[in-house]
Length: 149
Image 1 (cartoon, rainbow, N blue to C red):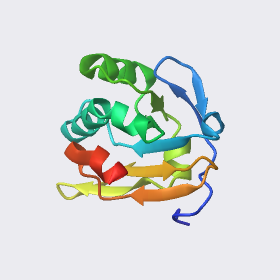
Image 2 (tube, rainbow, N blue to C red; image 1 turned 180 degrees about the vertical axis):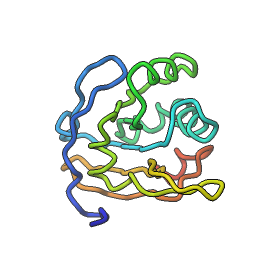
Image 3 (tube, one colour; image 1 turned 135 degrees about the horizontal axis):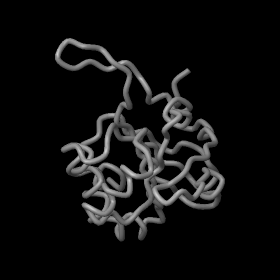
Image 4 (cartoon, rainbow, N blue to C red; image 1 turned 45 degrees about the vertical axis):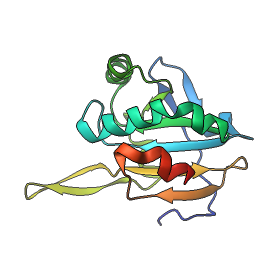
């Protein structure tokens, strides 16, 4: 069943780039931008992460915390964060539990081949843990304006 606006956000726990466990419960009483992206250090994912990095203070001024999620491991996230000076945590969802609970692990196709992968999607979660908005058509270079617009 696909998640909808108004649904309770699925609980999750995953390790960030430093091995710290981060859970949805850590954001109770806070607004969260939970964004799912396919792969560290690829053009679209880099554009999206850098847009959020460059506008983090604007997002924070609106009360948002930012958390990125991909199926890459902690070491990959550390390199990605260091290379682009990212200023928010990235979760290493190597067991696919978070991408699957949010329904973003789907069949994709490229060059006529089908494969399973993360569909770029952003969930805006309110202070009570409810999904306020789902952004499915992400404009990687202007993602912040999609979030606060």
